Image (cartoon, rainbow, N blue to C red; front, side, top):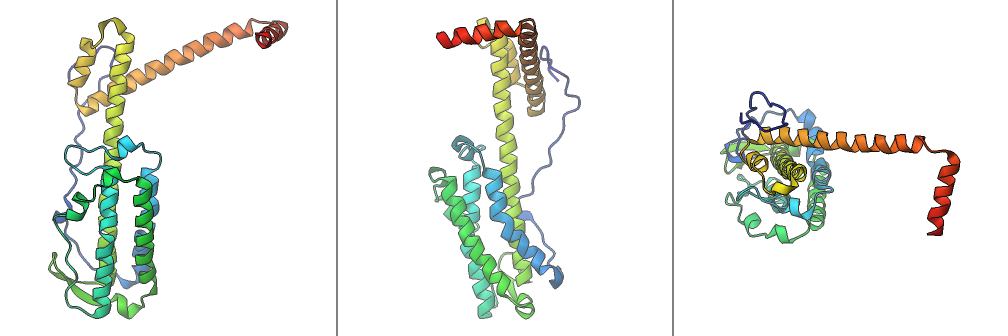
Length: 267
């Protein structure tokens, strides 16, 4: 690892787990009917989890892309886009069709949805409305209906209604996990920039000094460690100044403080 003055050594570099692509997932649809309510509860809770994940994020972070990959807001928009597919597949089960409606594997609706010019509030509200209607239908089905089967067009296997709900819950989690990943990624990038700004503050006369340039060349793990170091140094400096102020105030008499307050009010 390259050495950065004042930084703490990171040790061995940690390799992140590569996320599996959705289309490469394989499924075993063997859930017992007795946990149907559990699976329904998972899809019922997705709007709240999505709202929690996006709460407090700036528009800049919500619409920021990692290369050419979807932004956080586009991930949310994609979940909204697939709600009609879930509804159509319930229609297929109710009509007794042999094959379920097929998904658009090109995701054209999301790519063309221009979600980054929308607001997260609109997307979340629309998703919650659609999902609650989907769950309302699921809550009304009896045991016989939940066991109905139809062919999944991409997986080429027959699935039950409970399997469809499980499949949607897994798809929800896939995109919620990606949103969490993007939050961590963009958070680390901001910390990196703060670390570089801290270096500039410690060396204001040098502008873009060699130390700041060196930070740009570090791995993500190394940059995170440097950012932690400078954040801790700034905290120590703030605490030191606070202690100096406290000690200075302790040396004053109460009457002195009263006089000072009185003088401040006269100004």
